[in-house]
Amino acid sequence: MPGSIYKDQDCIRGDVESGYASASSSENSLPEVYFTKPHLKFINQQLAKLEPQDVLRWCQQTLPSLFQTTAFGLTGLATMDMLSKLPGSGAPTNLIFLDTLHHFSETVTLVDRVKRRYPSLHLHTYKPAGAETATEFNAKYGERLWETNDTLYDWVAKVEPGQRAYAELQVKAVLTGRRRSQGGKRGDLDIIEVDEAGLIKINPMANWSFDQVREYIRQNDVPYNELLDRGYKSVGDWHSTSPVKAGEDERSGRWAGQQKTECGIHNSRSKYAQFLRAQELKIQEEALQNAFQASETEQA
Image 1: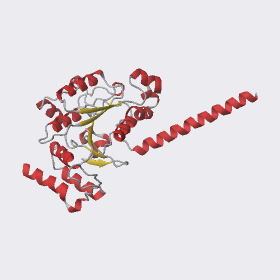
Image 2: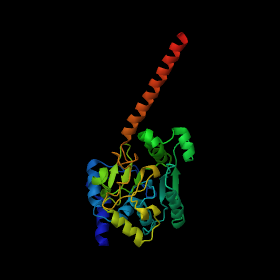
Image 3: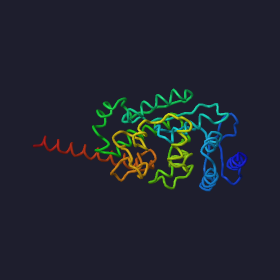
Image 4: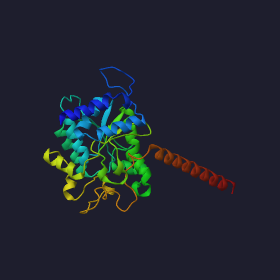
């Protein structure tokens, strides 16, 4: 079996028709990678034949400035453990953790356990701009923002910090914990995607089920969130996460009762550009109305 895996990987990296292009041929650093649509289709066809460990190995060998984004969910933890065990992998794993300041205390505790278990990890933590604590967040953005304006909450707590991390760390490719079995928009997930800004997103466990991930965690004694022993399957912020009942979709505990399946970091960037523009226009309109009312008062 190893022979067929290596053959597939050689095919991915070397096929003339794959569309692989680079900005540099230096052997000392990975080149920039550009994907045409036919190339992307070809790559996904090949990677779909591989196990997650081999997808990860291909990523390390091929993609420049590779990071893992994680909220320390089960799939992200399995990915982390696999990366730590790849043969010949001397480079430390770079993780980006978006601390929304609204994670469960169990999640915060898990972060410390993971750092002790994997001392070679390089953890880059990003928080909402201008806030270090939940109290500071409320003072700057308002109480219970996730209820009064959930799109704005997603932007300030997750999307903007994520974009800031990608820019400051010069991220070109990110590993995610998304899987098809999670349902919703993830039901037809490819192994590799490219977003509007050219960021390469890799979903190495797209083909795995929740049970497969959980079994990997068990067999390899990987640290995990204690909330999973209390009926939770997908863990996000405390205010939008609840336990899952038997037979329910694993992400049904996220935003229960809402027509929402993603927190924002995997939505299109144009959606937030439009939202921010609308917010700006609203502020300008309110300012004009206030100025007009003040003028009328002075004239009276």
